[in-house]
Each structure stands twice: as structure tokens, then as C-alpha cells.
Length: 273
Image (cartoon, rainbow, N blue to C red; front, top):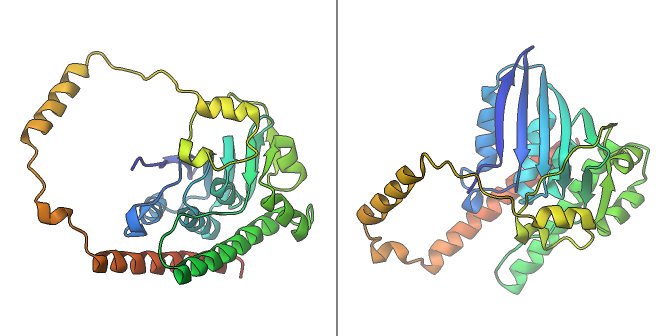
């Protein structure tokens, strides 16, 4: 899994966090990305201001909720800057900002959460109930940020319709606080995530589907090939028994997964109390 965030300390007792790309968690949420995010956030120290730069089409709902909660409860002033797109759960993370700025040509997108799951009919119905609860907490996030610029019913309708907002609309409706000059939007985004969006603006579809030319460092390509060949030649075979996965193992992992989801949802809900 590619790490989608990085952090660093700046001058004047401030720090910067870049959240770029697909928001993903480790398998089964065990010692997941949110844990690493919290550790690195703590490592920034007692800073007074944190700039959070976001360029993401979204991703894992529970990882995003956990990150939102961490930023929301941090004592520092959170200054969010949307670098191109803050869509889906990335828009929820943006709501943690005490001040949110967005370029006039950038976009925010809000919609109902969805999930991939497996199990019996009973388990699937339970997951649908979980999605309803997640939707309520997400709407509460938007309501808290928007204030009196939109009613809760209007927010619900926009969420249900998958609404894309440019910079001016985001400020008008209260999802952002200020509009800045237009910036160039670069290509990024997992096509599996992008495929579920039904109302993506045409200009973003073109950008999202573009494939930038890879940057190849010719002076190191020989070393890279040599390292790969060496790894292929020396890698031990995986014992057949390690490839097996029993039903009991799957059940245990599913229980741990559901426990982690419940913990994240409860922590997220506490952000509004």
C-alpha cells in the first residue's frame, strides 16, 4: 500500500500535512494507517498551527473518519488547503479545518458512503445499518461546518445527489471559508474509486484519466534491474501451508474488522458531543 500522507514541521511553531491520493487503510484495519497517522501527528510536537493540504478523491470511510477526529481534537489551529479536489471522505477530513481555503477552480464533492462487504443476508443487513449510521455522522460533520448557510435537509439532499462544488459554491454553502486563485489540477486517482462517481464534472474526468509520463532516472535503472533480478533469484518459495486460509481464520479476521469499524465510528461520533 502506498502511503497517502506525509508530515513535517515548519518555522514559527507550525507544521504541514499533505494528504495526497487515495485514502486507504491496512488490511483488516489491524495497526492501520490511522495508527501511523496518529503517531506522526504526535511526533510533530506542541505546534500552534497545522496546514493540511488535501488532493484526494476519497477512499476508505473509516480511515477518513479517524483522521478527521484526530485533527478535530488537536489543539492547533487547523488550516485546510484544497489542492485540486477534496471528494468523498476527503471532503469530510477537510471539515476538520478551523479555516478551509479552496481555489476557485478546485472541487469538493459530497455523497453517501458505500462499502464493499461479504457475509450472510443477516450480516449484509447489519452492514446496511452501519452505512446509515455512517451517513448520519457524515451529515453531522457537514452541518457543524456549514452552520446556517444550509439547512440539514438541504445538506441531506446534496449528499444523496452526489454534489460537486467548485470553489465559489463551496464557500457560498459554507463548506469552505475562502476562495483563492485558480491552480493547475494534476492527474491522480484510483480508477476503481473514480468509477463509482456518477456526477463527476467532465473537466475532472479528463484530468483523472490522464496518465502522466513516468520519470525515469537513467543513472539508476541498471541498479534497479540488478536488484530485482537478485530478489527473484534468491526469494524462497512460500510454504504451501502458509497459502491456506481456514474458515475460522476468515471469521476471526471479520470479527476484528467489525470491532475496528465500531471503535472508529464511536470515536467519530464523539466529535459532535
